[in-house]
Length: 153
Image 1 (cartoon, rainbow, N blue to C red):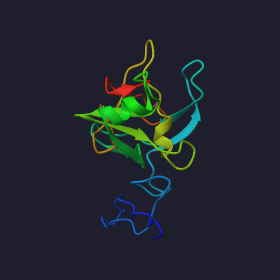
Image 2: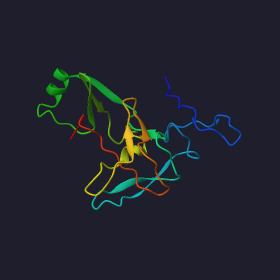
Image 3: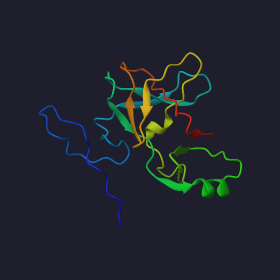
Image 4: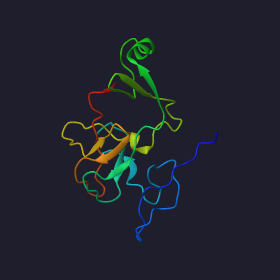
């Protein structure tokens, strides 16, 4: 079965829902995406995500994980005896690990940096995988989020 791209969730100037579909920038199409990717302002961090417009607290920035595998603790420990794996979050009693790094596992929001010395988080990852502004964000601010204690690296 072919994967179907979802409809953009943005509103047009007329107040109607955008009719475009989106696979890469979900939940928005390229015309409505909330961020751009560029060189991070954090030394040695590589690329970062930057706001393309001012956003209020709670505004949707994008989605983080597209595909994950759900494992019990026993399954996770069997596959990762050290108890450490990249792109893994523990939610409740289950472990969720991103599949196929580099194969559309993450939208560009996956490039958000964890906050560093002097940095202050301005984005939050919800259990649903949606990334929202955790406070007001100005256009061109680098988006920073801490993955939280459930993120195991």
